[in-house]
Structure formats: C-alpha cells, structure tokens
Image (tube, rainbow, N blue to C red; front, top):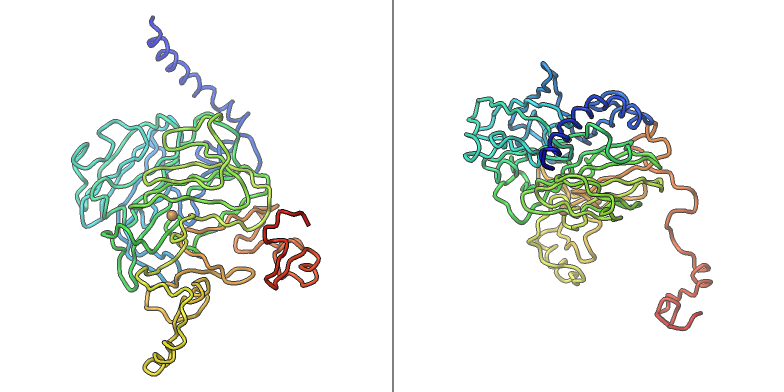
Length: 443
Ligand SMILES: [Cu+2]
C-alpha cells in the first residue's frame, strides 16, 4: 500500500469512526451554557442567528435534509420610509440562511417565480460539477414557473453563500443572495455562545423608484446589513465575556466593505475557503470583506456598552444621498440666501458648516425616500445610516431589552470641560502657547 492509498483508506476509516464517536465528543466539548440548540441538537453548536432574517426549514426525509427555495419578487422595506420591489428567496432578502452539518446530504428544491430564468450557485461549497448552478456551463437555467432540484453532500464545514448564476448582474443587484453555514461534525476551536450571520449589500434606489436599479455600478445609495439600513438594522445583543462569532458575507455588486467593530479586538478565524490556522490569526479592529467572500470573526467582548459596528467607508454609512452636489463647506451664502428668499421664501443654503445635522432636521422628503442618515440615540440624533448596526454588550444579555440603551456608570461619559479643569491642565483657549501646542519642554 503506497502512502496515498493508505491515507485515503485511513481517511475513510477515520471519518466513519468520527461519525460514530461524534455524539460522545460533542457531549464532552459542545456542552456549555445557555444553548439554543443548533442542527446537532441540545449540547451541539449554537444555532446561527440571522438578524432581520431567518433560517431555512429543513425536513429530514429518509436521511436527506430537504429544503425549498422559491425565487420571487416581493416588497421589501429597507427602513421605515423606504420600500422597493426586490427579488430574493422565500419572500426575503437575503434569502433564509441554510444551516446544516458537515456530512449532511442536502436536497434543495428551487422554484422559479421570477419573470426570467435563474439558477442557484452554492458559493464556496464543493459540490459535484453538475450541481454548481452555473447557467449554460453546468446546467440549463430554470425557466420561470419551473422547479429544479439540487442534491449534494456537505463535505467540509464552513461559512458559504448562495446566489443566482444567471443574469447575476440584475438578480444579485435586486437582492438575491443568502448565507450557507455548515457546522463541523466535531467541534473546531472554542465553543461560541453567540453565532450571527450578516450579509453586506449595496443598492441604488432613486427617490420614488419602484425597484432598485440593477444598472448602477458606482453610486450606490442604500447600504445594508441583511438588507436593512440603520436605524432598521437589528442590534446584536451579546454578553460580556461571552465568545461571539459573526459570519460576514458580501455579495454586493461592486464594493468590498471594511467592517469595523468598536470596543474590542477580534480575530478572523475562517473564510469561505476554510479555517484560518491559529498561528496565522491576528488581532484586528477592521476586516475587509471582499465581494464574493465570507470572513468569520470571533471575539470576547470585555467592555459593556453600545458599540458601533459598521462599514468604514464613510459613504457606506449614509442612507439615500445624491453625490452631484456643489461643495458648500465653508461657503458664505448670506447674500445668496437673501436673493433666493425673494423668489423662494423657504430657501436655505445647506451644508455650509458640514452635513452632520441634516438627518435630524425634519425636512419634507419626496415620497418613498429617507433622509441621508440617522436614528434616535440616547444622547442625541445618531448621524449614521446605511451599513451600521449596534453591538450591545450586556452583563445579562438574555434579560436585556434589545431596544434599550446602555446605562453608563457616572463619570464615564464625555461632556463639557470646565474652565477650572482646563486652567489646571494648562489648556488655553486664547490661542497662546498651551500644553497642546507641541512644545518639547515638559510642563
Ligand atoms: Cu462598505
């Protein structure tokens, strides 16, 4: 027996042995606190939570897990005030998260209720070639009104996605995408207490338009986590000291998203290509999630609070905004305002001192459109929108009110400085030499 034969024989033997042993091993290693049972049952890995979304129901029929995806159009609300006809699966965008276990045999029926053909590609999952869903290359596209069936065994664990591979440009732009999580049969790495799936996406929805514009390739104006823009993104409530996993996926048409978390450092533990070896993991605060890829991050938050989590591209934390505007920052518009008010009494130049307050102004907006940004915060208006959500780190997460705000211990919130304190610390607002002006002399 040469080495290769030995190894493959050995691998077969080992995997059979692993399946037999798995229940015992899981009982030992998966056992942990407050388990919402995942697909391996009580004591198995935590079920994946898809904020603002759902999980695809799977029925076991003679040893095969069977699911049904319906590709269709429906009305979707990005946030209150902005709705559009989107395309997705089972009435939602992203489609329901598919959650299964390494070694499972899956049979997924796909019914096409779109006005054009479609397919489903299981992005990152290694399947027999004819199950890969590439229109024309590996199958005929599914005609409108018909149902095709895909069947394959999940050979490897991981965080994958699914999306059409027919007229991708249109179908993905209108919302057709979903996450596909395969848990390892045996535990891998430390057990996590929370497991979330978040898909980033970008859309062009013009004020008053009925549908997102699939022809856009640069100026996206609705940026989303799980197809919701802040403030409609559901917060992620986690416990201080818990181990948290967030599975990030990106099927945006054009952009990578640098996702940034406040209040903690995380490690990238896996991509859609597999686990990152522990020796290659490093601490980070921002992870770029490329188009067509997943990044899995894990962390243990130690600081309680309401922590921002968002794409760090500043134009991706905005809601609907046009970019064809003159730059008004710093402009003196008094004379212009005087003249304009003769013809337009309500005229007011905007943006001369920045744009941070625009979302807070209650200005009339065209029907079915939303202000550039903003949600109510515990202190004032939060001037963020789009791909922004809140990680709520609590001492007792299971009793926490997801809509409630963190109560800061006294003396731990930034506030106005007193003249006395400034004087004592050598802060001089008079413009003269003070401690902040870079003297090399210690004071
Ligand atoms: Cu972004």
